[in-house]
Amino acid sequence: MHELGVVFKIIDNLKEAAADYNLSRIDSVTIRLGEVSTVIPEYLEDCWKWARKKSPLLEGAEIKIETIPAVTYCQDCQNTYPTVKYAKICPYCGSGQTFLIQGNEFEIKEIEVPEPEEH
Image 1 (cartoon, rainbow, N blue to C red):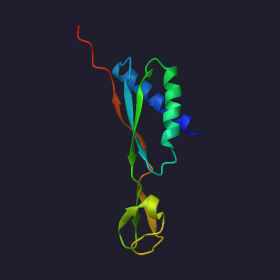
Image 2 (cartoon, rainbow, N blue to C red):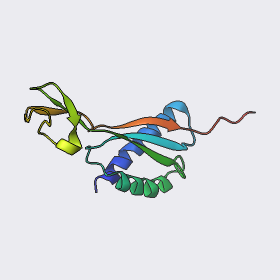
Image 3 (tube, one colour):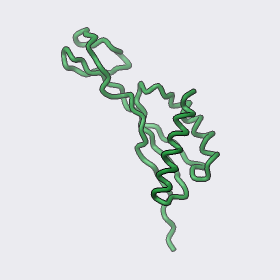
Image 4 (cartoon, rainbow, N blue to C red):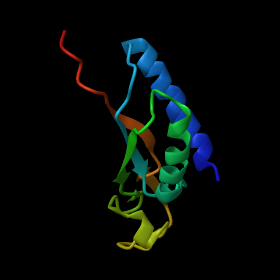
């Protein structure tokens, strides 16, 4: 399960951002996850729930996952199509001269932090 390693990487990035911006707590993190990225969202969420308990910065923090649809481009007919449905063979012309243009991403989109307290 490489999702745990992915979660550790996310946490490292969040700790770095927290240090840069002097944050003591993060409420949530939004991840953009490509449809064919090899990361399984349910496993990622389970690993997150376990790992967030290990850090005061993230205790109780939610992970939100946005799916980026996988799209493939055909070099022969220059059309795009949904990768998961048709794989590497273009549904328009039958060509195998295709490549993935979107859907393999994994990125932190947004971090939510508590409102600053007024003094």
